[in-house]
Amino acid sequence: MSEVKYSDPDRDHVFGRGYADIIDLYDWDDQIRLVEQATPRDVERVLAKARRNIAPLTPEDFAVLISESADLYMREMAELSRHFTQERFGKTISMYIPMYVGNACTNKCVYCGFNHDNDFKRVVLDMEQIEQECKAIRKLAPFENLLIVAGEYPTLCGVDYLEKVLRTCRPYFHNLTLEVQPMRSADYERLTHAGLNGVVCFQETYHRDSYKKYHPRGMKSHFDWRLNGFDRMGEAGVHKIGMGALLGLEDWRGDVMMLARHLRYLQKKYWKSRFSVNFPRMRPSESGFKPKSIISDRQLVRLTFAFRLFDHDVDISYSTREAASFRDNMASLGVTSMSAGSRTEPGGYTQPTEALEQFEVSDSRSPREVEEAIFKAGLQPVYKDWDAVFD
Image (tube, rainbow, N blue to C red; front, side):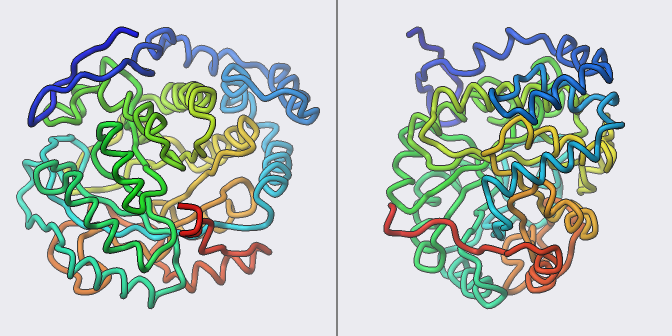
């Protein structure tokens, strides 16, 4: 297999090719046309295929279900989405909570509050502070799924630091997931031995030509390096791989079409891993960035139903970016995991500082309030889905 070099802040490494060499087979405008050209008859055909459940839906079928033509069939899509969700996941919602360990970042993403050029207090927690955060979170609710988040600053929050973080958090939580800068396969594998269970990474946008204008500087500016990061996770045997696009940078239909194709590729190549998807919408941040594309609540609902029909097994997550009432209504219709009580600044659970939040939280309810709403929906909140015995 041929190899390609990527620029690393410290030194050049050589890595094998991955999905970045496949994505260009799919023309962006063609993906949007698949959505725009879908007719009500196409929707009826795809829904009939979904009901029979003989073969998985294709990305082309998915395009039909996110189209405006599918709007007349939302009730049937909701019923099918609920059916397939409960068939695979039961009447449960997996609960998780994020812990931000650092907001220092070398990237200059134009839409992000952590942008390197933004003038605010930068914080990177030490191990004693992290342990205090763990203890504070455990007092909120019996969380076992912890999402560890840091800005992309390899010299401050690199693999050595992250290994210490994982080992510090592991006595308090059974399931540890990282949302940090993409790393080498060898680094991911190393971290699995320190307690890492999953990795979340957002491609942000799959539009290759526009990607650079949103990410002009920093390691994140390298489209291929970020996109092939999911291959490196799979090669390292990461148990669960989380993916998504930031809806608002480009036409959301193009991004979710590319996301669906990317998921299918990863599932076939790294079939031992589990997968999750998230559909974060642009939210206010220090950057003041205005979204280029707006996805409405109704369109996001339709997208959620479409993704559940497209893939019955994928975990669909809604974070506290979304409003409380919206999350409550979607809890029984396709969503399988939710965060609660989120603080998006380092040290937010113990001694909230003046450190900037990455984005504004829309659902500010306590974990217990979210749990109560889930119970009212006839569902069971689940705080644990992994045990140390499996490591």
